[in-house]
Length: 235
Length: 298
Image (cartoon, rainbow over all chains, first blue to last red; front, side):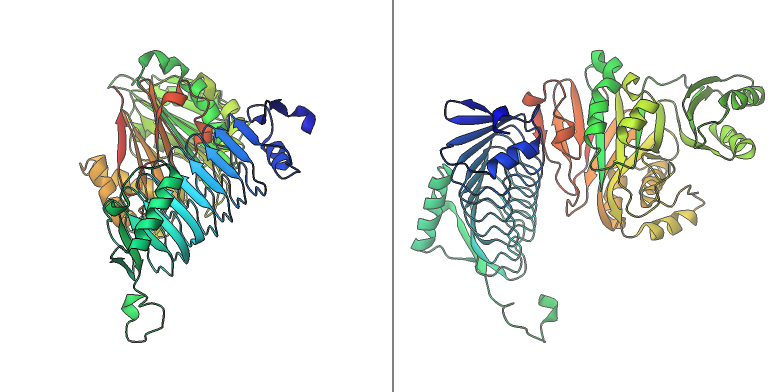
């Protein structure tokens, strides 16, 4: 398999116009010791590019990725130099995934760790069920983002759609633009110094230059933490 | 799951290549819909006095020559274009007369579409097989609406394949599933509207056409649809001079649009757009939920 892999300086190049996706992913799941970077040419919307990474290497996807790009990522730094389809970086455990364009629905869903940076807009349900990962979105996020997010942080530099942070647990959201509507049990809270420091750090990690003071904090009001038989309309 | 493709050529010089540009789009959606596929092509309209009727017969050995002879005798004047199981009849006759005649004499033949601009093909099989059977690559025209089907709620039959049509020069394809197609069907049937299949999509197609027929604009009809359709849908629609696209309020089903000075191309996934000329510099975006997008032929 390695014989068909072209090494250019330190980077290994896969061209999905002529090489099967499975060959790329099997290579990425193999022993990557000594490999610094892998470049993927002509992704052309293929699904599941660089899923299940488990090594500290850089993967550059030169074009648009389809469903589930960089899902379940551990340790790797994956950059999509284009747009990403649904489920980008879902269930990420660690490492860093960056999308230079927009990401479709469900980006960063249930991510346990790591950092997802989306320079453009994110679709609906971004960060749904977030479990400890961090997400920075340079543009807007669609409706129902951070639904039931349990832990971790989302920084949204643009606007948010309907139902932001519905049924939040311990995850915290920071929004710079307008929020069309908050979901059940989500509320605006004052920004503390620790919030400003968190946002400043995540913006720096994402390479964005907004001021942390422009963001508003959204967290759980915790009214749904305990069952209340008299308030069934709330749920 | 299903796949949707649409292409509208702004650059008139590309119109002879409509089919050639579209076939890789359709085949790119094979994984989303391997059991059947279909294509509505809108070309130069025939004279106002004439109509085109697309006919289909599931029987591969059907004797079209026999139908041609008898129908010509009935109509007096007509042109026929036969491809595999499919025939386009162009004539001055009222489409309903042709429909009734076909129903009487050839009950195995179905009317797929009626209009001045639309030709419609749909059949079971892989998209590549259907495209080859009817020589999709040779299509010329200004715009088209195509579909690859993975059946979920009704049987794999040519009738249940998309696009669906109603009235003249109107078609619709659907990715998703409606939860209330039978309520829509019962409401429309009471108004005398007839159904020809048991697919949920036919309800959406005939509902929107019913509203257009009452004089509503496509945009207004779609605003009503957001209230009356329960379920998941990305819908792509074609008229004689327009493509229109909507996604349900939850954007459950994908869609991506690439627009250049030469064309507007729509697909369920970017994979089907990657081959298009100039796509690397196209304006690529995801349509937002509950918004009506439409593009007109210049």
